[in-house]
Length: 263
Image 1 (spheres, rainbow, N blue to C red):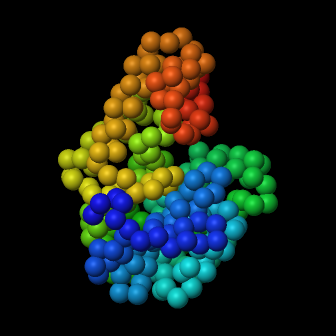
Image 2 (image 1 turned 90 degrees about the horizontal axis):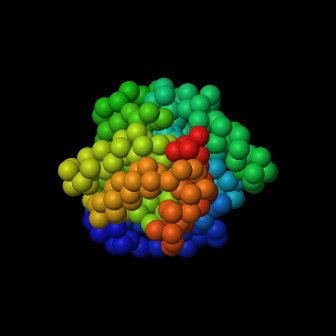
Image 3 (image 1 turned 30 degrees about the vertical axis):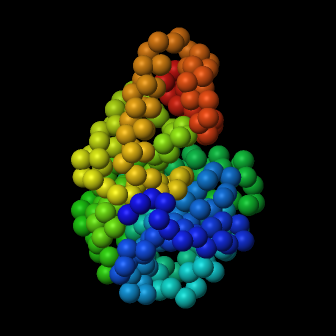
């Protein structure tokens, strides 16, 4: 499946890009919110599973309406625990470390910061997880998923569409990289996707990408480490990265990355 082979449904705020695999479809919801969230819906035989949740109230309303006539069997809540007003009666699935991440860890810190930054437009309430799942195969709504535990939460392989969901990729934008070890872990993960030949890589903050994008990101991460080793402080690091990647978006993520490399 080519990452650009989809039909688009324009919504009031966001848009839905629909990938047709025959018996199964992927609906990629581009929220157009302040943090470029993406939410993914997998549909098969009139049933659906959602990956992640929108967290701004206007997007929640819009996506709830889009899903009105679809039987949603569950939501996989990995890295984005906020937005509990979204499909409140639907079962929520997560690993225990993802639960901890959203309620007590780094995810909670992000939610608290976003609540301050965006005020009443942001739904800071955290989803109540009804089904704690383990790594490995889980079937929801007749669709198989492979759960891969990560340091913060979990990634999701979707065999029927030869795709994988992870938190961040973004081949032409900065990402949050928590130092050289984290960069190496991200590189290993992306190389794993390439070895498996995944056709689509889905992420929380970017439209679906492919293996060329994964290779581009690997090269970026390798270069970040070289830049960090050759400068003396966070400001020099940001300046050099900006010079080498002038068209990249996500300056706020670069700021955070600089803080991790030079804390």
